[in-house]
Image (cartoon, rainbow, N blue to C red; front, side, top):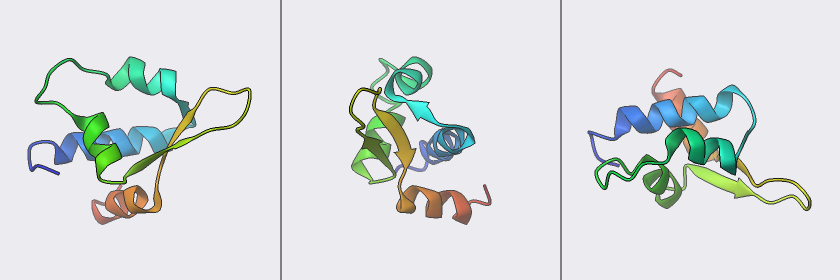
Length: 76
């Protein structure tokens, strides 16, 4: 994770832990067309978030243990 994106990634993870979020909520709030702001993609690549599939429900997005550890390391 780049030093530039680290604060945004921490904010993203904190936002995810505030309440249950589905894929549509995440894309509505965090999608970007800017190639320099890749918070969503970086979080997936780094194993900080996971997609939870439950039949008949929208896909949930949740922080992984690694994501929660990163939040804790930053005092959040």
